[in-house]
Length: 265
View (cartoon, rainbow, N blue to C red):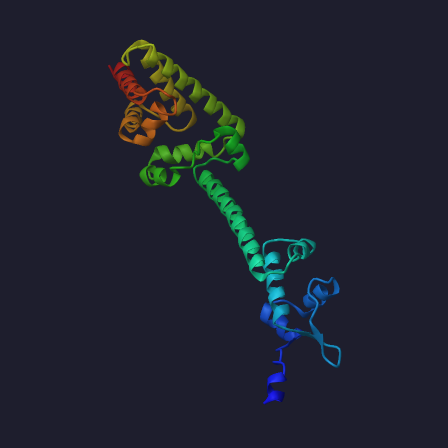
């Protein structure tokens, strides 16, 4: 009885080949980790072959986890230093993994926006899109727009034209649109009537801007666009909220209708 209780429990060990196969690495990799002191095997066979115990295997799992996160071997050695508490290492790996996930999600979002921009005919890099459009995302409603108008001549013509535009073209388009919007705001806040000459002239300029840069915009098509400004809250917000002029969307709508009636009379 005494002899049995005094025996130490046998420690299970693994050969270098067994560890390599289980971890999905090469034997050469384990030899390299040994040579640089990153993972020294706990034992050797009488013939001098490396043997690994459970603690060694757990250490290898931590090493491979950090390597998966993109850390260089010297950085892994630093991360594994300290008290060696496995729970602390797991917490550290988890925090790093969450940051990596966030980074990858941002990369995926950037790729999605780039693909959407190309589908819309915008041939700009993400950096150029930020320079041109700022925080406004021109691809935000790309899928919905294609579903609504993808089969129309106007959509196809817009795709054809915009596919050749450079960053400078987009900067010019945006500058023209911003200037026109500011003049709409000025006319609206000054009390100029929507069916007055000033507002109707701005509406005509708005139509020609679309006609010149995107698609052939006749007066019926321009009325349809005006209807969206008041029927779709997102379009309304672009005028009323983004430009800080509540009621401006309705004003632009009315000016477009008045200008169409003037042109067709």
